[in-house]
Length: 187
View 1 (cartoon, rainbow, N blue to C red):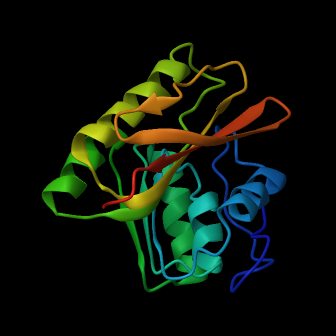
View 2 (cartoon, rainbow, N blue to C red):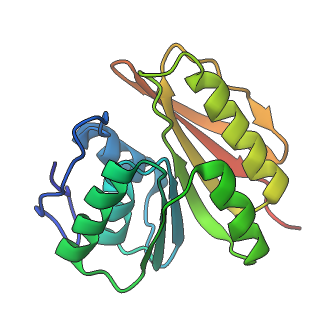
């Protein structure tokens, strides 16, 4: 798996064996849809190898926070951090539902949140995606006008709205779907 563009273009990332990595074309599509991310803050939940987050770093995000509970994945992320040596990257070795309340307590706010629960392995993946959206709404760590991008199976039906989040775009790539939610802008 290579980073597709930016500062770290062409760098090969370590991949844990048991994960379904986000394909190059899907990672490229995420950032084509989002546009310029330079200077923004980025949170990746269910990070796996951190490939989407490292792609964001390569494209100029100011800060990257990764959350991953699986030890094999944590090791791969640590190796990728050693490889890239970014100054602005943190790994939280815990599940998303524990990291989100902690980040709220720390008064952290993110412009972009990407979540990719393991949907091919779990019969409850759709509910895990919905549950994570609800937790994000409850703890409000998304900046006004910020985006949440949920990667999920195309078979999963996600809500059009979730609290202050409104579904603004859906895209499909084979069996993978991306749902882009935007938080209402402050008035």
